[in-house]
Length: 155
Image (cartoon, rainbow, N blue to C red; front, side, top):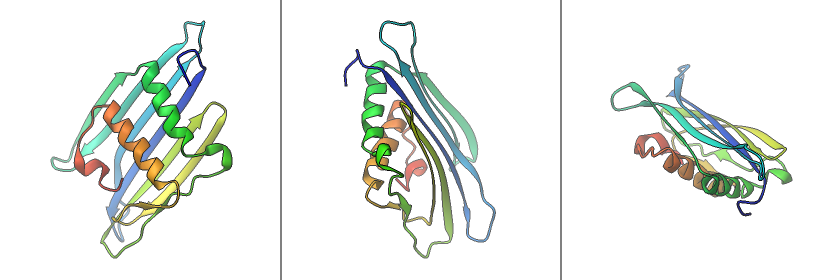
């Protein structure tokens, strides 16, 4: 894929967490969207994260424009999830911890879309598509320049 290609990609992730037996609360909203149509003025991309800092229990927002090269990289990482083959195999790994995380993830690539729900204890993710999802998540965090370790402990 190069800059003369049509690129249309989006990722939305909502993270909720809590203690077992409790309702929990939202902790993170991440949104990446980009569209690039060669020969038109439509060439736009943005990454935004609104998250709770668990150390301070305050909220912050990080947001910035993204480039076509970054959109192509996100598209490549989304393609690694193989959306055209069906729902990616991503599951929560269960353990005996006393907290949980719920992820709601919507991924769009050209006309293919998938919405996944992942429920997990604190041990993270498993499944054949989990490594590709971790890499996508880490890349999106790096685009937003979000390096808070507690935020991606499950990834």
